Length: 144
Image 1 (spheres, rainbow, N blue to C red):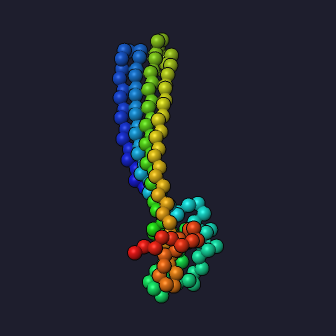
Image 2 (cartoon, one colour):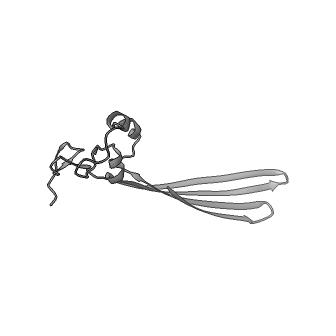
Image 3 (tube, rainbow, N blue to C red):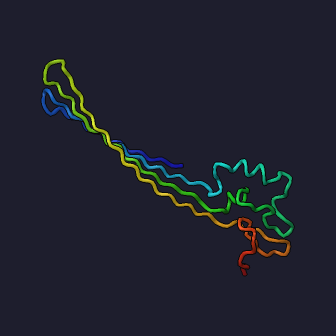
């Protein structure tokens, strides 16, 4: 995750009895994670991934390639989110009579979020080296 922030503040005394203040804050958050890293990742790993299974089979392919496995984290796609927040605050301080201070504030927030979730099929291979999609449990198109 990366976060960027900028703040602008302006204060002015317009008259002896009227003061003005404005502030604006902008934040951008760039968040990137593997697509398989969901809320149930650890539960799925505990239910489906035995700790004694070897990482690779005898042909050098990933031995266990389920959607929720470690290989799913490596090559199962990316989840990217970019969120922009803009906060505006505008206010006046009015003192029409000495020691009678009135404050008026206006606040406004704008939020914009874009998300790109690229979920890739996890490809496993049988003993003959033929690719199989673990997520669909069917034969994939053979890659030549």
